[in-house]
Structure formats: C-alpha cells, structure tokens
Length: 205
Ligand SMILES: Cc1cc2nc3c(=O)[nH]c(=O)nc-3n(C[C@H](O)[C@H](O)[C@H](O)COP(=O)(O)OP(=O)(O)OC[C@H]3O[C@@H](n4cnc5c(N)ncnc54)[C@H](O)[C@@H]3O)c2cc1C
Image (cartoon, rainbow, N blue to C red; front, side, top):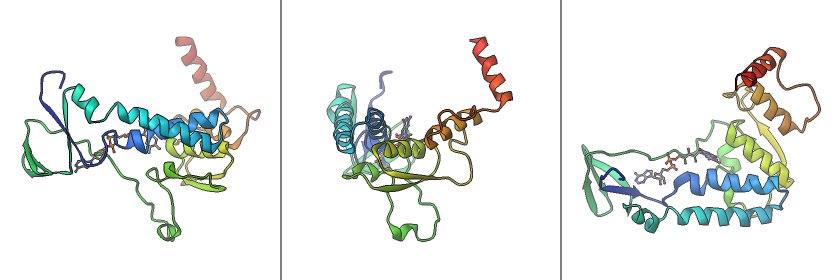
C-alpha cells in the first residue's frame, strides 16, 4: 500500500485477528498482571483494556487512515485472482492469503465431551478456575500455565513426553522447566558442555 498499490483488506470477523483478541495481546496482558501479583479480577480488567486499545489502532478507521479499505465479509475465490466477498466481486493483481489458523483438538478420548478451553475461550473466563490442566508445553502452554499458577490456580502442564519448549535450546528449556516447577537453587539447568558453549558465546559479544 505504501508503495502505491490500492489495497483492500477482507476480514470476516474483526481486524486484528488472533493476535489482538485471542493471542499475543490478551496473553501478554495476563502474564504481566500475574507477574505484578495482581488478582485475576484485576488482570481481566487490564487485559480487556489492552485489547480494546490495540483493537482501536487496527479498526476500519485506523486502516482507512493508512489508505487500506476494509471489507467486512467472508471471501472465497471464484476465479483466478478473483474473490467474492459479501455483495462484491473483487479482482486483484496480487492476493495475499493470511487466513490464520484455528486450535486443533488432539485425539484424546473423552476430551470433546468433557469440556475444554482453547485460546479462543480461555480469555473469556470470568473467574479463576481452582485447577487447570494445560495440554502442550510449547510457548503458549508454558506462558498460560505460569500465569494461571501465579494467580493461584493449581496447574498441571501436560506434554507429550518431550521437555517443555522442546524446539528451543535444551538449556533454555531446562531453565523454563525449573522455573515452572519452582526450583530456584537447584543444580545448574544446563550440562557442563553446554555451559561452556554459553560462555564462549558470551565472550564473542
Ligand atoms: C495464546 C497465544 C499467544 C500468542 N502470543 C504471541 C506472541 O507473544 N508473539 C507472537 O508473535 N505471536 C503470538 N501468538 C501467535 C499469533 O497470535 C499468530 O501467529 C498471529 O496472530 C497469526 O496472524 P495471522 O494474521 O497469520 O492470522 P490470524 O490472526 O488468525 O488472522 C487471520 C484472519 O483471517 C480471517 N479470515 C479467515 N478466513 C477468511 C475468509 N475466508 N475471508 C475473510 N477473512 C478470513 C480471520 O477471521 C482472521 O481474523 C500467540 C498465539 C496464541 C494463541
């Protein structure tokens, strides 16, 4: 758009998507409130205020100010480079697909019937649950587990046998595992060879 292209953003729900409403913004606001040892009720207020502020910077008016037209509708291709959205048919030289993702339900017997939260519903909780099982030890699982534990919920973080944050360096993963378990003064969270590697990296800086 800043290079002169006429730009149309087609959004079927709310501009801002997951990040603003069910991802980065509410989770970071919740984590920050938990780190400040605020109550869950206070955290909800802070979280909703953060979401409202960010959403206002991405709404139709803000987009228009940036030169982007917003079309609120569900889009589908009807021909190459041609989309139908609402009552309009739009043809464009370039189409960027940024349609995001949805939470995947793991095939755990009984899960569907038992009731569960995802990132699309967890931020709508009105009261702190007494206990919570978080499935998945990736970044989102870890951060939500830590925040809810800090608010006072009993949290069990369940992974698939991999260490938490298994895609990160083992040393980083060990630090997070120790922090989540409340281990502070225990053994160093990295084996000696990795400790050396860490020191070498520090000297090069
Ligand atoms: C709890 C949580 C915390 C996170 N924290 C961070 C973080 O701290 N930092 C970070 O970088 N990332 C974080 N993420 C990831 C981040 O939210 C996503 O990577 C990001 O939102 C993806 O953006 P996107 O635009 O690709 O998709 P989305 O945000 O999902 O947007 C896609 C949009 O497309 C729309 N759409 C779909 N199909 C159609 C259609 N046919 N017609 C019209 N519109 C359509 C949807 O309504 C949606 O608004 C977090 C995610 C979660 C769940």
